[in-house]
Length: 113
Image (cartoon, rainbow, N blue to C red; front, top):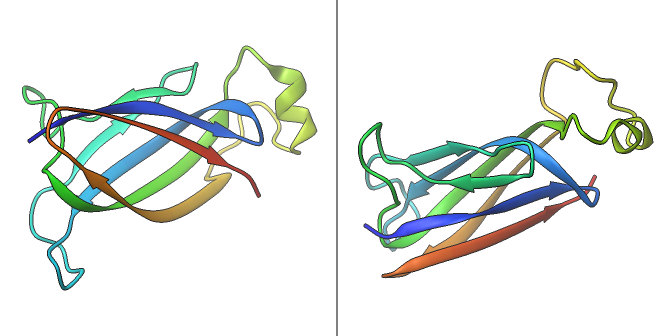
């Protein structure tokens, strides 16, 4: 296991999003329990395996991100991407692959339409 944290923006603005790191084997199939987090109002997150253990499994991970909304502190940004305050659903969903290495890992996800 290794610590994983970072931040998520959508169209240049901090985003509240669900993020999931699913460990993969060399064949690209799932190899166990995923680590997850929800980013805060500033877009920052820290992955947790469960309620008491932080981090993610070392190795390749399939990363799923679902942006729920932009930070409430920036209503102008929300209007600029046609996402009214209180929107229900996902503004952006994406799947990526990232390598988790021993030690502290920082990932910065810059998402657009």
